[in-house]
Length: 124
Picture 1 (cartoon, rainbow, N blue to C red):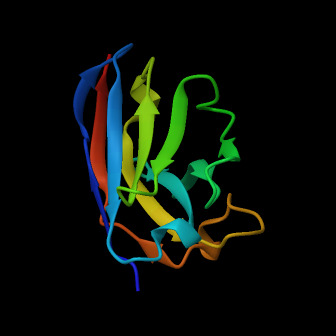
Picture 2: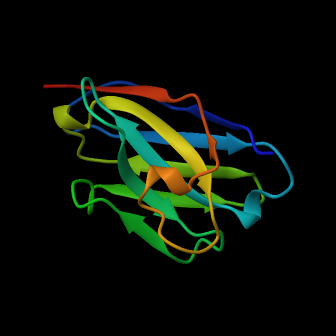
């Protein structure tokens, strides 16, 4: 069982930065790949970024590539999402999720555990 708690969301102006954190409970954090998803107003949940259990491989949606960076600290049971050059279209609730060690990480259905989400609002 893994419990995930996101933090770091807030209101920021376009062009600004935020860093989201996702703290995980349990001793098996290092066994899980981790992902970030988001759901904007009236939109479906979409993939943002993911990182393998080892931290070696990372993956990004085209819409955030070059602006967002995912990282993890297995000693702290925490995964991060550094978001730079934010745009109004990045406004959404951001969720972290724990998923499988191997296989695709871009589909929400492969993830086993989800956090409650943190709101990110980018003003123009």
